[in-house]
Image (cartoon, rainbow, N blue to C red; front, side, top):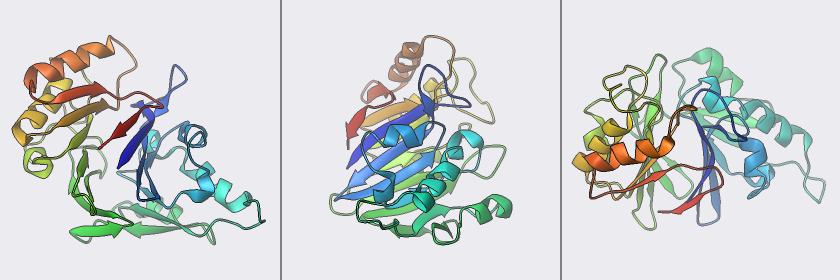
Length: 247
């Protein structure tokens, strides 16, 4: 499967780069994971929004859903070369916040589908598992398994460090992890440090660790060094907009 970073900052966009959003593709199936700011324009470089097959949301903070409304309006107003509208877009999300959940459904455009009531959900070629994270609002980490290959991607979404990440991430091929803080900010209740991400990667035996939900200040390469120090056997990378990763 191919992972493309559409946005990688936490909180707000800067430097011509938006907030958390990722395009995951397998077997001609296109899944958008979160829809942060600037993600729609970035996605257009690689995929017509009318050809998007599904959306998967971790939670409803603005830096993860800010482009969702304009994505819905695109599919409402734009037509393909034959004058046809796109089919109804399934948006997989949680329903612990009903006000936001109801906004996922737009008549003849999109349908909100809750994933938090079942242990596993199937979306195209992917099996999806979820785990609640440590965050001020309901938020879910996502384990995505590509059925044809068995490859595993884990997305922590937003979270402070919790031990449950280690079994949830066990032997994953790729960990896409919230690394909003530098070393010495450990045990925060909203986000993780690069050191904590590295600790998860080491204990879970992760092959590739991609640090994302990045801070706007500081030397970002320090995050890589701090994670690599904890996980010397993992490949540690910094998420960058327009970068493609093969998993």
